[in-house]
Image (cartoon, rainbow, N blue to C red; front, side):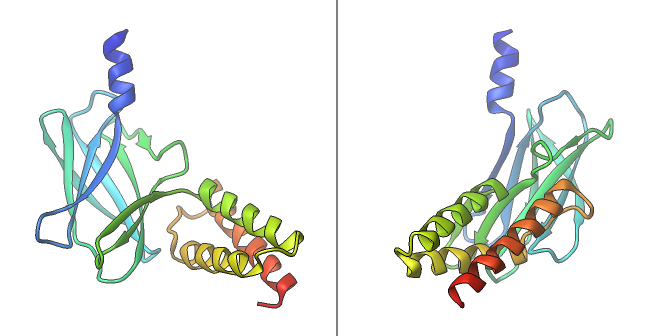
Length: 173
């Protein structure tokens, strides 16, 4: 029982910049026993790529070449039995910036909270400049955010983009 709990706590994805390189190490500890894992990745909604992930001890590692601009990286994994680890349908999302180096985990739920904060500021007519900044950031990221076509995540992203536009139209920005 304790081993299962330890695996559950430690299972997941870690992302690192390689030393002296803009490339990323994707380190994945699967939730189930498997011998092969395939990584599906998409930088800024440019199309899905895939690559086999090398097993190194208990981890699976892959190296991704990172584009030069600010990007949103979406990833998920497929096991050898064709089960998918997609972070419970949310995908694993990261904001990636080469200079200055930055890796930040993000999610649609976090962007929903930001839009709610902006909405409260707009409705109360306080700190409108902060609301505009939040909406601009969320819109920029959602525009780049990769999703799987016809997935619930695609619907959430598109609905949130519509809400951002409606809020912008209320303040004339």
